[in-house]
Image 1 (cartoon, helix red, strand yellow):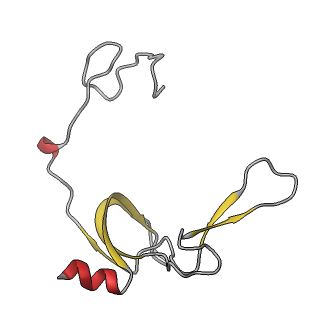
Image 2 (cartoon, rainbow, N blue to C red):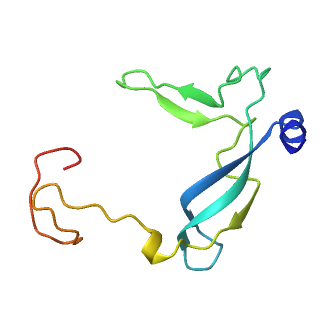
Length: 114
């Protein structure tokens, strides 16, 4: 029922694992997980055609620039800060070069990501 209500009003609930907020006049907050309410693109939009992004190209540039359409802004309408997961639940991956779990092992790996 909630899904149908959200779909009727072109809204979606999304989880962001690391959101950073910049309040006006304050220090940045985050990265922290949030649960956010986003507006979905309008399928009958004349500018983006329901994609949510508008291609803005300048003559002479190699790649086009993508901007958010006015019918679907990137920033959420409302969001709720979620607590961090406990440290013992976080997955620490071993270094592919030496096999240690230290963040600063000092090894070099030639496999992606570098």
